Image (cartoon, rainbow, N blue to C red; front, top):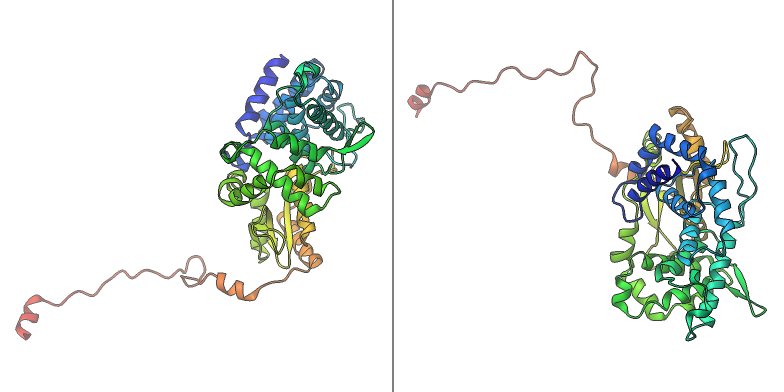
Length: 417
C-alpha cells in the first residue's frame, strides 16, 4: 500500500533530520543500501496513488536524506503546484526549504528523466512561485495587523518564527534575492518582508536564544546578503532590528555554528582525502573561510588548498545520466567562496565514482595545474613522518636478540669488595 511506503520513507528521513547526531557517512550508507533503493523504486511504482498531502512529507524526507529520487520528483512537484494557494504557510515554507536544499531552485532548467524514457517539463519556476506565495501572505499579514483575523484565510494563520526564517534562508539558498510581489501597484521585495515577519516573533534575547535553528537561518541570511550585495541588501538589514543582529553576531561561534555543522565527513570526501595523500597535495579539511576583514567565519570549505582554492565534493544524485546538480547548500557555499576571492572546484560523485584509483590521481594532478596549486615545502618538512624501523624486504627482517647478558656470580662481587 502507498500509505505503508510513505510511512517507511518518512521514518527513515526523520532519523536524519537537522537535529540528528548520525554522521553524513551513515546517511550515505543507508541511501546506497539495496533495500532502501527498493523502497524508493516501490514508491515510484505507486506514484499515481500518492495523495497530494504526502508531497511535503516526502520532499522533506528526501531533503533530510540528501537523496533525489528523480523518477518520483515530477509527481511530487506537480502536487505542490496544484495546491499552491491552499497549502498552509508552514507547509509552503517547509517545501520551499526542501526544494532549495535538494538543489531544485535557481534559474537553471530543471528537467527530469521519466520512467518511460521521455523528459519531464521544466520545474525551475516552482521555487519562485512558492516564494511569491509566501511573500503575498507576509504582506497581507502586515496590512491586516491589528485587524480581526477573519479577513485572512485559515491557511495564512499560525505562521511561526520557524516558518518565516526558514523561508528567508531558502530564498538565499536558491539565489532568489530579487524576488518581488505586487502590492498596490508597487513591486515589493519578498526577502525583507519575510525577515520582518520573522523578527516580529522575537521579543527579547532569551526568546532568541531558545529559538534553535532560527538563529542560524537569520544570521546566515544576513551574512549572505552582506557578501552577495543584492538590490534588497539595505532593506533586509533594516528589517532586522540591530539588537538581534548584534546578539546573533555575539553568539555565532560558540552557540550557533558549532551545533549546525554536519557530523563527520562523507564517503566521497574521505576518498578524495586519500587521493590528496597519494599525490602529496597539501589541503586543509573542513577549513573555515571568509573575507579578510570578517571577525568570524560562517562557512567551511571541504578542502582548502593554497592559494585560495576550495575543493568541494558533490555527493548528490544527478538529475539524470551525466547531468549533475549540486545541493542548494553546496551551491550557496560555492557562490560565497567565489565572492570572497576563492577559486572553487567541484567534484561530482556521479563522475568520480566511475574512475579508477590512477584516474582519480591524474584528475587531481590536472586540477593542481589548472588552479595554480602552490606547495609549501616548510609545511611538508614539519609533517614528514620519520621512519622508526629500518626499511627491508620480506623474509630478511631484522631479528630480535634471543639472548641477554647474564649477571656475574654474587660471591665474586662480595669477594672483590
